[in-house]
Image (cartoon, helix red, strand yellow):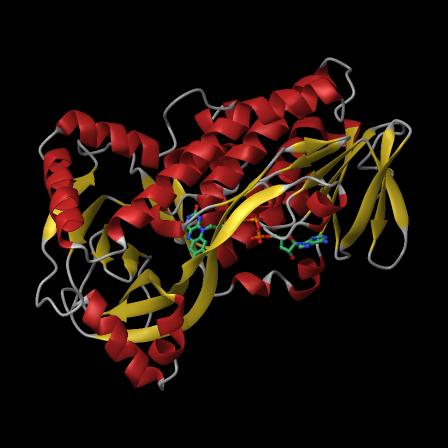
Length: 418
Ligand SMILES: Cc1cc2nc3c(=O)[nH]c(=O)nc-3n(C[C@H](O)[C@H](O)[C@H](O)COP(=O)(O)OP(=O)(O)OC[C@H]3O[C@@H](n4cnc5c(N)ncnc54)[C@H](O)[C@@H]3O)c2cc1C
């Protein structure tokens, strides 16, 4: 930390974990408070330039996009964000010759904001890091191995044994959060008997900004439009959920066999296909922390909640946490209060717990409803999809939910300054 970037006596916030939510939180706070706040972000992945995220892409909802715009990150993403204009949902068996569309939804009017953009993780992390460097955030490529309260601070131990003091530690160190465990915060969770396979697929025809979610008995197969590129000129990201037991056989062959399996699900609607990146398979789980806080410690992102990727909302929830925590801490700093005080952390927890719980329950329910081939269940769910398709009010409700624009939102998600 250099003396030019931090005022003597400034409060110190330490963010453990430099995934997208952790980076967004640290950047928001440092931008808002400048030299009045010392902010350090620790993550061993910083040493490898965040390459862990290679080949990943996320659906960034409209609320999260507004936050990234406000932080000056969005403008650094020129050419790397593909709007999703609409989405088509089908329900069929794997062997069916066509994937009949039961529901479509998207922008109501020309010129209306898209409800989400697809953004590749690498440029997004790079843009956040560039903003962080510019704001004077200290980026430390050491891991956090422990933290314990010490007077009116937290004593944080780093992986090389060095220790430092912080007024507040924000744990965004992922689903297996070491800091959550060290603080004794319980976790309610279970694994899904499914895996999420992600890959980048090239195709000959333009997707025109349309996303597809094909509900298949093994799990949802999502096709999400990316910006132009690849060997065939156009690209989409797939998030392919399959029964975990079937994954080794599906991915065990050579690239041509894997592509043939993808083609059976993707269909040839967008012309010839190529495998541009991946596939990589990720275990899927459901989990919620019993509390989002302990003494001078706040959890955010996957350290606080892990949900099924069926609705592409995990990262969006993490960014909403970052927006809410940044707001609670920022307001406290402006009032001269202790940013790690119990009132601040309680306000943060209150503002976020219901949202995560509701989203975890909704995604779990959707996955149970759609990932099976039980005929009566199929009939009922297809009737439900048809009803939603014919109701503009219901469609607007679901689009608002997917865009992260319903209910009371933290200022950053509304596109306002902290
Ligand atoms: C198949 C799949 C598809 C998905 N698609 C979407 C999507 O389209 N949209 C969406 O919103 N969400 C999506 N998600 C969810 C999203 O990937 C996660 O919610 C998000 O990446 C969580 O970010 P995080 O920073 O909290 O955790 P992570 O991404 O796990 O990052 C944790 C960070 O903490 C660091 N770390 C770990 N331990 C320590 C330590 N001791 N000290 C310091 N640093 C540490 C790690 O190096 C890492 O950088 C998807 C998930 C899956 C599995």
